[in-house]
Image 1 (cartoon, each protein chain N blue to C red):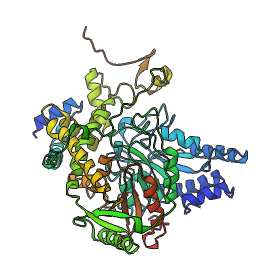
Image 2: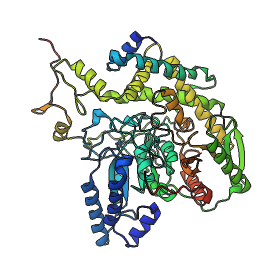
Image 3: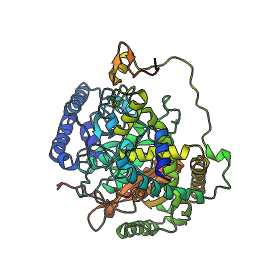
Length: 483
Length: 94
């Protein structure tokens, strides 16, 4: 059961060959067996999962399922609010926080009858590329327990890769869906900025954040994306985009693909070879491949870190120990509650980013840092527009390397930041991008292919995803035994 | 950046940096600053004001009363709550 793809689970449910309770019980059994090794969850409520599954079965029994997806379990990254449930953001400051409301995406999933499985681990406040910044524990990569699953949606990716769930929600500010999806051998999509409401996603960097689906097949990505999309009065940056439609006709001969001219310089050799193989294959099939000048993109990580940290320093100012969350009160003054609660509640990386953001917004440095980064972001956006006037898609490896070892980059923040070198520019531009499984390296670790499309062209992106899903050479069997 | 400036920034952000973590924080911070300062090299001479905000439509909503949290819900969230109020230390010296 647990080895089945999302699409098979959906079909079995709708043919009434299996109940939601049976599905959820299989996954729960798997979770009980291997969660001690993977540690994908921060908190876990078996009764909550089973009661939703039973309610779903009841609806189906009465012939009134809420949708075709009624009864399918979906993991929720622990920075997306569910009313009455804990939402920790992997931070001490929210360790005991119970959300008084639900995110719009959660209400949409519930309206379709999904069984919510909350509590998936992340880097604290989604700040990180390895899940090592969680205040609670490090999630392990199911392909190699000594390695990181990527981040920040590392819990979501690892849970799917370990067959503990068929699908999950993640969030992506600078690569946080795509990079862990790549390192764990699964599918993950960052939607066009505005396609999915951010209401109820705990804010990190509001102009970059997007919620998106991660799953064990491309159909899960398409289905979940369609369900969670749409204009939301509670998020003024959300837009009413057209529904995602997969084009019927497909021919590689009509497709123009952009690749980086100076590719391969800092990529792991296996990644480089696999990427070149894919490019050679699509060329053989008739696609036109055009080399693009990506020299401006070496600045995308510095631009990203100035903008994201500026926004985070503002967004995280709400955590003051007064209205909700951790309060550290040593019978001192009000100012000390602010200082002590924040200093003891936030972890090292969160503090670093708040400090960097506060610095780049401070008087005397604003023009040179934040102001300059805003202009440079516009330059990146212009460059993308130029690219998309020449090509339909941009192909890159999702990550320049496969999963690295736990602890390998924790002492060097800049090296850790560079893990997102292929990803962050996509958020700066607001474009949609998907990471698709692209085979294994010589150590048996997953490689991912990132495809970026023009704004609101998720349908075309997914058409390619379905196409690549038929390539035997790119398949990644998810590990059975976890050891 | 020196320790004094970092402490000033921390104070703006309502964060305390202990003496024990000051050295490592300062080292990391300077390393990150040096890296992000590369942004100065980007040629932005062709960027105009209108390029900065590509989606500049205003989003309006009608000015009507909507949902909000009840006092009861707020009382459950607040770390300290008494008689309908969130408790904070005295802020006016007597």
